[in-house]
Every structure is written in structure tokens, then in C-alpha cells.
Length: 199
Image 1: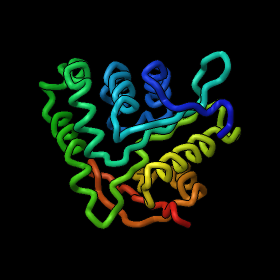
Image 2 (image 1 turned 45 degrees about the vertical axis):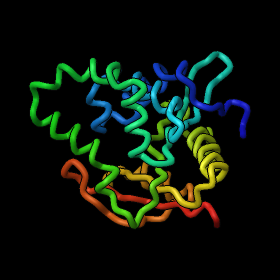
Image 3 (image 1 turned 60 degrees about the vertical axis):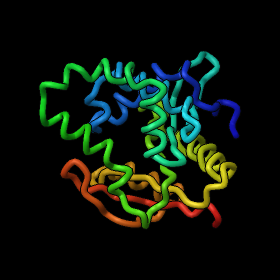
């Protein structure tokens, strides 16, 4: 593992949240705001079923990250148990907006709707700062994550990406993921890729 790639910790949450908000700006989670994202990224590395990696420069700048789950459903449950109140506070302003509430419920139900034919393990999110692309940051954090999945005895892992996200689709294909199915999520087409870790 490159020296700059380190396990994600709670101390990285603010930098990771900012990177997520900027690099994945069209996603639903980004629309929930930076305070929610900070709590989410404090929760993920504290969950037994979750983990992540960051590319952290010597000056502590985070240039990229990956967040993963042995099981997305378990990570959601463990996150709510550990930081549920703190995650809920930034969401109170959305309680009067039925469309946002529907999307929240849809997101929480996502793990049970993806299908039993796909792996439970999942890459939840990956982002690299704009000025760091082309340096191998994305490939490095993905490589570290796939090794951790293997260490945990996981043989295959999925990732979902919007069908219209050409760069994201190309990135996952270049990392060895193969298109398994196309599903609808929040009314948009989503490609679900799977990587066989035994190959």
C-alpha cells in the first residue's frame, strides 16, 4: 500500500465530507449538506461492517477517499446505533419537504432492493480532488479497499454508479469491475458492477 494511503478515521470526516460534496455533487447524499456528510463519515469507520481509506498528504490534506461496507444494510444500522441522533439533527430542516423524505426512505431501503443475486459487500463512495486526478489516487485507494475486502474473507463486491456518469463507469471498469445489472434508483438508471476478488 502506498505510504500516503491510510485507513479512514473519524479525524478525516470533515475533509472526506468536503471532498464528497464537491466531487459527487449530483448525488442525493451531497444534497443533505456537509453536516450530515461529516456525521456519516465519522460513522463509517467506527462500524464493524464498514471501513475506508484516504490518500493523505504529509500536510494532512486528503486528496481522495473510498468508503466501503461488508454489507450496506449492516453499515446503515450500525451507523444509526452509533451516531443516529447526530446524523438526524442536520436532517431536521428536510422534515417539511415530502420529496426529500421519500428519497431518504428510498435510500434506506436500497440495500433490501438491490437483489439477492448481487454481493452484499459494496463500495459506497469514491472521490478524488479535481487537481489530483491522474496521479493514481483513485486506483490506490481502490486497491487498498479490495485487499481489505479479501482480508475479511469477502469474495465479491459490488458498486453502483449512475449510468450517465461516464468517468465513474470507466473508472470501475478499469478497476476490474464488470457490469452485472442496470437498476432504477431515485428515478435514474444506475449501473451495478461486480468485482470477483478470487480472480
